Length: 265
Image 1 (cartoon, rainbow, N blue to C red):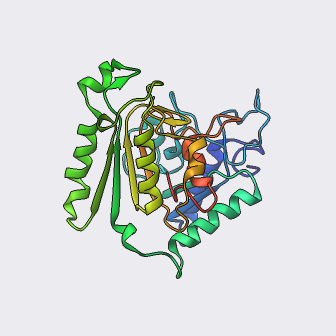
Image 2: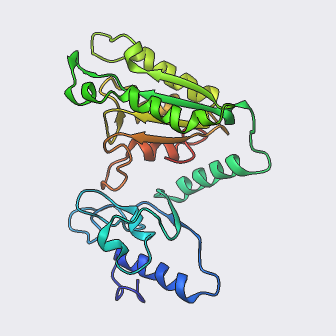
């Protein structure tokens, strides 16, 4: 920050440092890990939490791609689809959380990693077209299971060796609270049995998948998939919103879970 933003904590300084490294170093970086959590209040107006690695805020959301577009005018457009560098973030806030995530990466990639049949399994999860017993106009016009089937057809099924599992909510019954506990149990069981990839299409928020509550921050504690950590993607609203001060997103809970959860979200 002292060199690239006058000593102020500014996300532009991180990007400008990467631009400099890419252009000045004899061997420029190809991969970047942001080692620490961050939130939107990097100027410290209201938040009291430590902002370890600043986030860049676009017009709507946190935009981590800001750090990957390193050519002139790329950031201004926000339309370039080809990053100049690979970037990820370990959203940790303590030494113990850092140790958990590093241990999971070693378990996933190391010499003693579990390379069993689970590495060839994919789990597709799709919301239904109802909300609390009423027809949902959004998902009724564009059903989530149709989008999920497209992922299966266009991407996953091109490799015939992949073992595809599904948890589609329209196949499960509600309870009196309009939740679907059997769907939640099926999801938890599939992850515990071992899958390499999980994809969710549906409604959600920063702490939950679907209004039927099939996966919440609290239920991540039911996972015991040690050394069998999937990549979990969520085509849903706000599930990965890690940048809200004082709040833990579902995606963050999954990657920070000790000996369980996800390797990446």
